[in-house]
Length: 284
Image 1 (cartoon, one colour):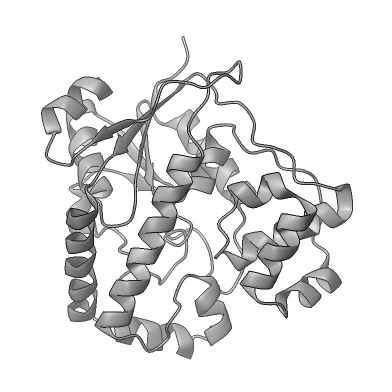
Image 2: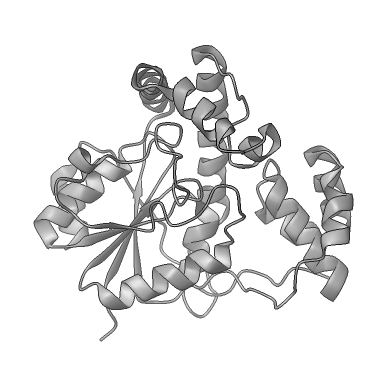
């Protein structure tokens, strides 16, 4: 019998981390993060990273495993996460990075295409909009799957296309994975985001960004890490976070799970954070 792995996914500020801790307490589980920004050391307040107090003694993995000055690939994430799944009796994967979750569940193929520094330098001079336009022309299928606002992944997709002609399609979902999707009403999510951003500023977000810059991280790199503003105001960060949450929701809706046969599978289950009993029943 395959090991059971719960995957709790949803947009930022939806209550995933709190839910995961409650389930881990009840089901004797450990948590594996699936967040492409929380893997980096020093990006704590700005990424909404769970605190030691909020962990309530539950082991959390794949947090603070990478140097923010260096790129951390989805392939690296997949390798580390799979190692943890093998070690943990009851793994609970939680996060909002759809690409990481797809990689871990076997829906993304990784072609052996080495980095092309010359091409990357050339592509990085172009805007996200221009890169996405090129990708749509060269590989329409991949363009439908990718986050058009993620420049790093746009460049990587074009790098792969230049080498092998197209990006391999998503693979089939491995049957051992069970998904729990937290559904949040948009108006409720907006309120949660506003509350979180205000809390970030109280906790010292601006000091954290200044500390990152003093450590040698450029404004360009900060932007790659998801910090659109290196001197943010509450208003523009709330607006930007709402856009980010919308992109996350679009990914999950656009990339539903499939059965191993490749046929359309059972829909991801939606829950509100308050539906604790229903979630526990589904997860058990």
